[in-house]
Image 1 (cartoon, rainbow, N blue to C red):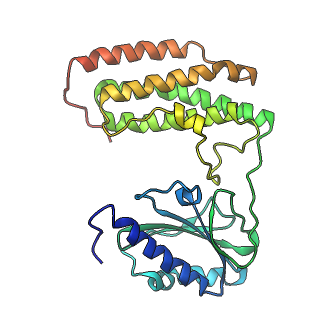
Image 2 (image 1 turned 45 degrees about the horizontal axis):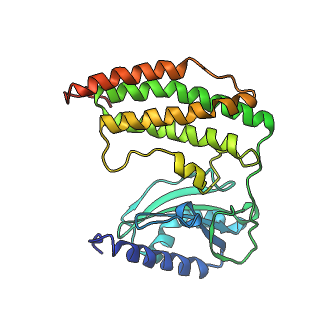
Image 3 (image 1 turned 90 degrees about the horizontal axis):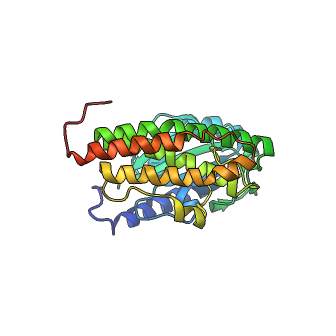
Length: 285
């Protein structure tokens, strides 16, 4: 099968693979349940989304199934790429393996023992023969929330100058990497402040939908990533975090109060350099 030729046909190829996956797993008596997490679990999937699959397997036969995964994949479609197997952080005692089927359709497989299986509320059940419980991650204590917030706040203000420096050099690739770190830190801080009863925003095994209020205030780079836009996003992120400072203070989080002004000065310097026009970017890998 050749790669799909348009975005209109890609979801059809992906849906065909999912149908084969579900049929294959349903026919396997060793498998007790299967469900999707990720964007499909959150009902936020688009034409580009891949599958984050969880498979609960009878404990006694899990080792033998893991030893014969290539045969399982072949029942679905001949894989075009199989990554190495590794431990999973999303299922207790689970194993993870990324597989590309023709399309290419990415499936992130996680196999785990049925006796320890649990699924998040933000998941899409394919089938369940064993009654896998739905478990919401526990909320943080007040002290845990304060400690998380302090760590993320310091990290944000430590990374912000680095993002500005990459932008001032015209190195948009590294600037966008730093912006991703800043964005993730801001999301964590926002949730710690605005959702005090929510689960740990940094936990690996959550699949939370972004709150509408958060979506509205998270700046994005958009189609074009260039130094002026990157600098705008950094400035906006810094402003959003600074707006959280009073609420963070009420949590007992110490505020590095000089950093917003220091970063603002660096942004002004970067703006002056950017106005001078494009120049060679120093290689950095």
